[in-house]
Length: 310
Ligand code: NAP
Image 1: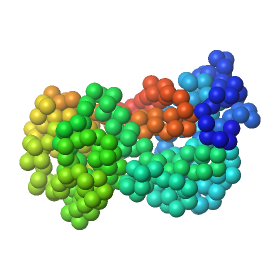
Image 2: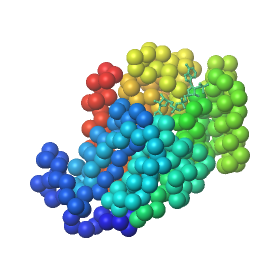
Image 3: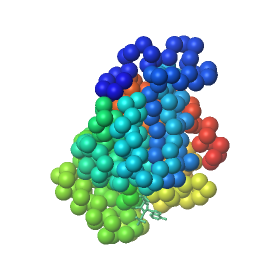
Image 4: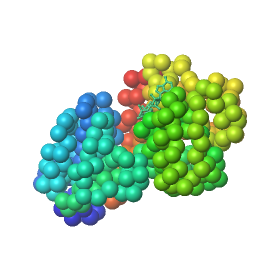
């Protein structure tokens, strides 16, 4: 199918005998999705997407490609009608942009693309990291409306989520704390300038106590606490209030020190794995046009993450 529409043709769905647990049955109707990066061997995306295709009974397959020449890769994708979707990871999220036919507004603002959809030879770029995180908050029953959101860190993932919250989250204001004032200021000015939201800036150490006291939702967006440094945190436990919502982007381990301290203080928490899964859920739904069996993605990825970082 080359027109980018939903997979309605009989051959694009597998029958029950071909669902999860049975051998792959690749045929001329199979549609390809993939992740590109360099390196790409660490990616959990093939695991998540293939589990979801199997659970949904879709005639799709998802592969991983270690790619250096993104221009050649995207020319190949454009020429292959069955090549429906591409996830883009480090270091290609910016480099792919000049090769696309269209870029959705949020990805334009964020300045990076993690999702490419082949609409009958037209390559459309998007970002699902921010919208996926908004969905993770919605799944957890956390409303952003009227809330003040504090970001710890000023890197690429914070950038994606801050833009999503500023553009679609209806939050009251955002503050970003980091360790390099120039980087924080550049991000703050960009988000405020493009969205009109009130965005504050500060130092990750000096301004943390006041910022924790004056915000409702705390987003941990640095690698601090990542396996094997799972007892590290950038937030002393006593700074949490029971009415805080705490979200840690780190997903290895599942319960970071930041999350454990927040839970001890009685906070509601959102886990990094929920961002990981929901950015993939949005990709799945863009590429297939059907609801994603997200629990299949979770079931596929949870044992791998537990094994890697118990
Ligand atoms: P990034 O672009 O490299 O940004 C990292 C940020 O953390 C930067 O602001 C950096 O500060 C800061 N930082 C790093 N080490 C620090 C330290 N020791 N003390 C204080 N600040 C420190 O990385 P990213 O892509 O934004 O990823 C950030 C985290 O989110 C990573 O742990 C990543 O695994 C996780 N993540 C999770 C998901 C998910 O789906 N759950 C998705 C994307 C990322 P400087 O800029 O000043 O160096």
